[in-house]
Image (cartoon, rainbow, N blue to C red):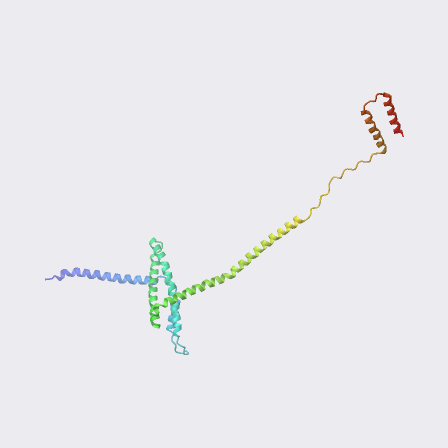
Length: 265
């Protein structure tokens, strides 16, 4: 016969253990959910999603107001495309940040709270993508398979337009810089041309001869007539001395007297 009294103790122990574990698990999950809810969102508010829900839940007729026209379906589809475009942008950002964030978490550079925020953002985006696909299929069958392709093309178009707008904004600044550069280059060229013209005119100018500082020597005075006669007598007397002596001395003396007589004449 089974002794229930002896089995009551272990059964009570198991019941208490299971109850305590269940209580701890429920409390832990509640605290974790509260902590996750208190964490800051990874992305800012989803404006496109809020606009879509506002248009979809807009009441065409309300009390105490004039009757308004219902929102066209084309407007709702366009709003849904904008919502899908924002979803693609956020999914791409999460994929680009996940590898770096996991590496930093392994190194201990970031805390666990940041990783929990990232995981919560991933879960929210997964739910968002599923919601967009279901909404697209509600408008047009099988549109959920191609809505993100159209949204991706719209996103690329927005990126191209943003880049073109940035280049257009820089156009005025670049043009002003180029005008200043062109003006400075032109001034440099004109300065070089002026210097070349100035150097050429200086080289072509004739040089004036310098005036002599010292006066020319004065001309010698003309010899007098008396001096010239004496010189003539001396010149004639020189060959008589150098000539060979005649055999008779008297002839020589006579010749001398004759010359003197000529001089007297």
